[in-house]
Length: 400
Ligand SMILES: Cc1cc2nc3c(=O)[nH]c(=O)nc-3n(C[C@H](O)[C@H](O)[C@H](O)COP(=O)(O)OP(=O)(O)OC[C@H]3O[C@@H](n4cnc5c(N)ncnc54)[C@H](O)[C@@H]3O)c2cc1C
Image (tube, rainbow, N blue to C red; front, top):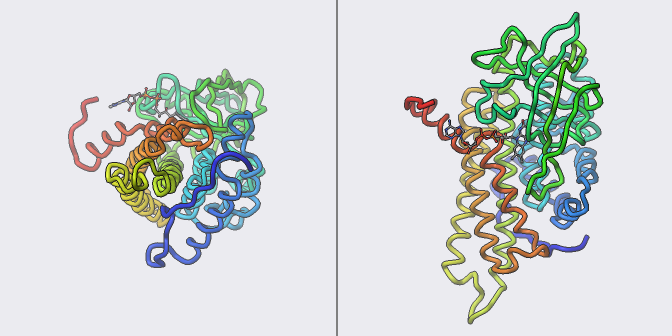
């Protein structure tokens, strides 16, 4: 594989069994080895040539990494979010942050495993686990970005079928996903506080239309508009109970936040490793640039902040895997916030450390400047997390 120099650095060290079990450390090492075998150049070549990263996805699936959180009886690894976040973090730290890991096994796999019928589990979980099937997730709407209570995608019954109408925006990977899990409402709950319903819409369903959005983002996964006008779905497209409401939705959204934290931390580690390697050897005066504190201190700060964010992410994953959805929700929001900030700062500092080389294609870092912003916006913006912590955690009044 050509292009970017290999960079191995200190940011992945996890040598304390009290913090991480032998099994998880072995998983971390194995995924890291896989990711480094592909490396940043594989990922960037795919982006430049307009290809997807299917080969890595399929190999990760065959090795059991994609479904490490899914139930064993349906082809998964029987682990939890702690394991799946390790997979994404390590692939990102190797330069291959696979965005669809946040969506396919983490949101969709979890929701189906927890609330799907036996038939839905049989249909989807083994494929999501081994990588032969992928699922996208559509919640965002043009007029309901940060405010999900304004969702207007509506499902009405027609005999035993459902007819689904609505618009979605920024949905990742619709073109390569076999189906999209769409968040809507039933006709009876069309207005007011969101009572969401989740529908599996297979890609080839007549009337399910999608168009790519021209993003200034260097990633193999594209974002899409989705258009649905009375798209006919069978009764069993509904996942779970139409009256279960937010509980079911957050069973998927909390993993999404934890995985977005892993996405940001992995990317930040990759950038920081590259910067540290460069700063050790690049010399323009008497000593390597890494000896100047103006270069060294921001890198040290970035490392500390990534480590702190990772501890919060581990807490959130631990709480989620232990079944405490409420506590996991708060921790997942905080982890996503901390990781997005730490990741974006690490990338920014890394690009600066490399001087002109920070902006060359050879080093592959500048493309992370936009990619690292994703964690600040999606799936929930940093302002909405600060709103959540202000109101929910600190009990401050709401202005909106
Ligand atoms: C790369 C990428 C991938 C994505 N993938 C998916 C996907 O797979 N599926 C999906 O459904 N969605 C996806 N999204 C959408 C993403 O979740 C939304 O962009 C996000 O929820 C923000 O919504 P918005 O863009 O409409 O921003 P808006 O809601 O319009 O917000 C704009 C700005 O205003 C701020 N703001 C809004 N309300 C308040 C308030 N009350 N207080 C303070 N500030 C406020 C926000 O913080 C933000 O900075 C993706 C987005 C990106 C960029």
